[in-house]
Length: 65
Image 1 (cartoon, helix red, strand yellow):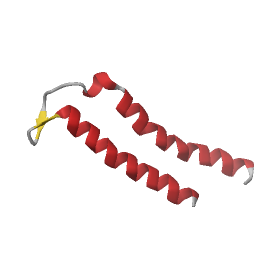
Image 2 (cartoon, helix red, strand yellow):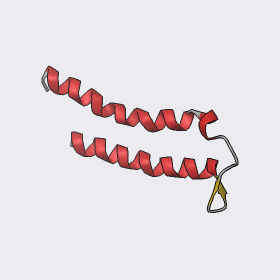
Image 3 (cartoon, helix red, strand yellow):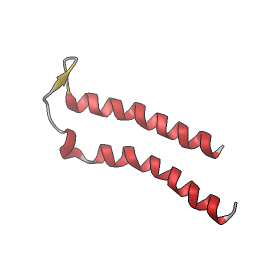
Image 4 (cartoon, one colour):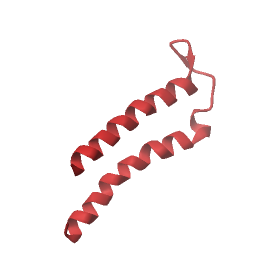
């Protein structure tokens, strides 16, 4: 792997950092309102990030495979 390929691969790995920051930034989503489908926003937000994290992880995996 040459130097430019290694540098480019680091940028793809930053995609894995996005869900980590989004879930650890608690003041953004730590509210009971609004409710979506009868569930507080907190639960809905966490569930959506599970799906987004899986998609981002799969994307990075397929790029490096």
